Image 1 (cartoon, helix red, strand yellow):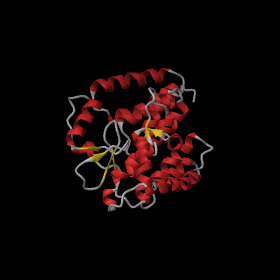
Image 2: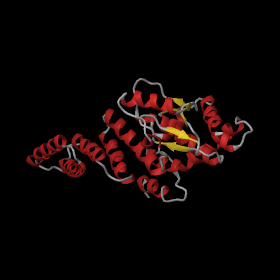
Image 3: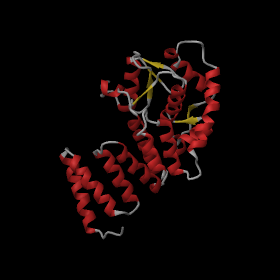
Image 4: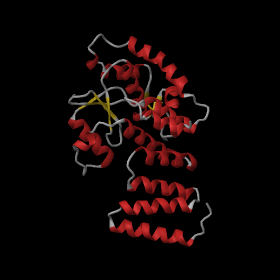
Length: 267
């Protein structure tokens, strides 16, 4: 079974094996990685975290769990340049540094093992966590509570003051949505660091994990363009046109397709 097949199979379990699926995503990019070994190794971290938690009902342990991870030096990476290793889960476990989403994946898995209720929230620009029914979110990087005003300020920093906070920004993310976001992060990071073949793996996975959309088809078309694969690029541009409702963008995509049709297909 390929790492991709193993990842998708994790989503078929009840409940989905989110953490293991994320490890299989990392295994697509590192053929030496053995997810089973890392799953076993996580037990030691579970014991470390559990030993430092206060004697409280499990519903009140989500924030202490995140604070305990910070005490153990699991932190958001502060390097000036974000790299694929900041999103690849095995690298985050090794270095104890990563993007908020990767830190959240570790926290969600530990919470599951310790029976602590915790959910992922697909907040724009910075993945968040939430105890079901709570009136606040939790930052996976240290456990800070974020109320409505804090979320609004975070959204402004990410998308500008013209964007209003709405319920869609605070929706719980299911396992497929989390993995799709992780795959989009990796696709972007691999492209930024001139690794188009790796980015293609991520771009393909994005389209397998959820309903296709305009942006994801365009992103894969750009990867195919870097790989000098006009057939693949043409396919995704045609699919993007099916989703496109903006007249100006439709004209741009149509022109790009015409230019491709003049070029010989080499793949």
